[in-house]
Image 1 (spheres, chains in turn blue, yellow, cyan, orange):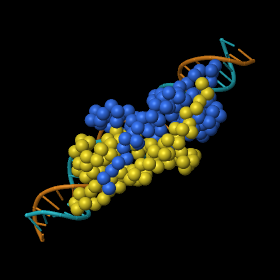
Image 2 (cartoon, helix red, strand yellow; image 1 turned 90 degrees about the vertical axis):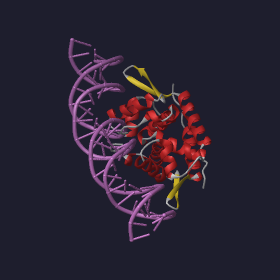
Image 3 (cartoon, chains in turn brown, purple, blue, orange; image 1 turned 180 degrees about the vertical axis):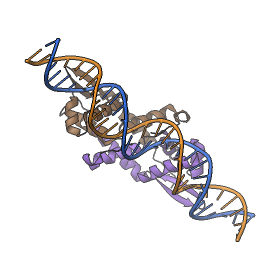
Image 4 (cartoon, chains in turn brown, orange, purple, red; image 1 turned 135 degrees about the horizontal axis):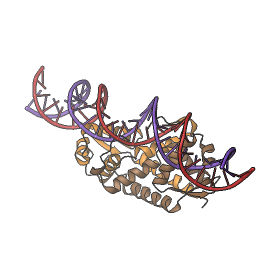
Length: 107
Length: 107
DNA sequence: ATTTATTATCGTAATATTGCAATATATAAA
DNA sequence: TTTATATATTGCAATATTACGATAATAAAT
């Protein structure tokens, strides 16, 4: 992102930005939509569905994990990635309140 | 962002990601919140409120303009930046439907 | 124990973002 | 017309992101 002067913003502003950033890539949108459709959750299914190299997908999964939107469960040598419904809901709530609170303007 | 293979994703996925990205920086969150509070809309007010250099703010305003979230109206030698309520609402709707449609998972 | 399959990590190239100083542009005021 | 003020643009340094090949790590199967 280049350096970002996080210290001059409120924790809430930084948190919101971080959450939006987690969704700011089409691959991560696609991954979440795929998991939501429940057509598969195994890492390899995701790799095949999205069409990016396995290490790239692994990196995107890591970013989604870092904001808590998904979690991985080991199933033998495979890993099932699942959406964390509570985090999903809490993002939805935070985004909703951001949009509800704002949007007014002068002209 | 580094190169992004936009061509392998759907227009809707790319659009969603682009919209999320517009909000993926605390300065842009702060700008939108400031405009929403209607304490000021003049570019210089924003610069003073946020506490980043004028060229930096100008750049962030440009990004918000590019997704249509704000628009600038010339007032003499000043410029009043206003939130575009329709675009605001349409983002809200798109995000809402993204979260409503998704969030299910296997485990 | 070796092989195979699955996922993660490392290293790196290409590109994008962030931030600012310097400068250009534009408009109003003197 | 000159000056002052407000905003945009340019150029650049520092850092982050995206993508992938190579490789490591893990666990099942042989």
